[in-house]
Length: 200
Ligand SMILES: N[C@@H](CCC(=O)N[C@@H](CS)C(=O)NCC(=O)O)C(=O)O
Image 1 (tube, rainbow, N blue to C red):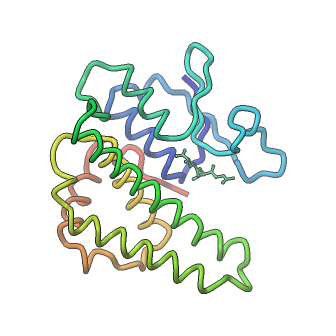
Image 2: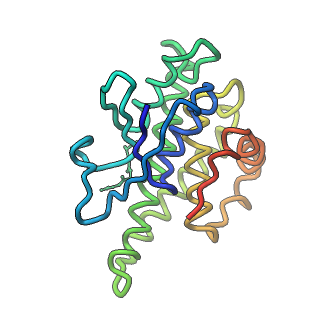
């Protein structure tokens, strides 16, 4: 399998954490892709122009991190990261959506200062901070949902927090979210998370 990736993408990390958790990491060849480069060819594989983007051994192209993760989860016989239909599945998918949403909000906030460094729109930054604060509070209030066997939900939340810590180290969420901070300290010590720590 070939995975087009960028080194600090939290969505790529979701895929690689899943690959490690499912024992498939060695089967993935990583191809660095700068999606922001003027001449990028990522659109030939993913019309949306984003990484991660996987080409299977059979030559099929799969994109969007959640779809790639579910594909990888179908390739092994161990504990599934996507539980079967039922309460555990909806909880896992909801957490996955929350983690992805936190990343999307963080990316919008980051782009504001990167694209318009001289005139970032403060109201957008404030809005993003409000959304992120609400997401952290919701995770803290429902920290029990993060317990139990590893699911795609925990992977997505772990990768989202890791990326937000990398980009906005001064956000200061730990003071208000002690239960979440405890959970994250344990989760980020997993070999799959340690092996995929984002580096610039
Ligand atoms: N929903 C997508 C989001 C992927 C995404 O936003 N990737 C970023 C890198 S972190 C990207 O490629 N952005 C390029 C762009 O927005 O044009 C997924 O889960 O894979």
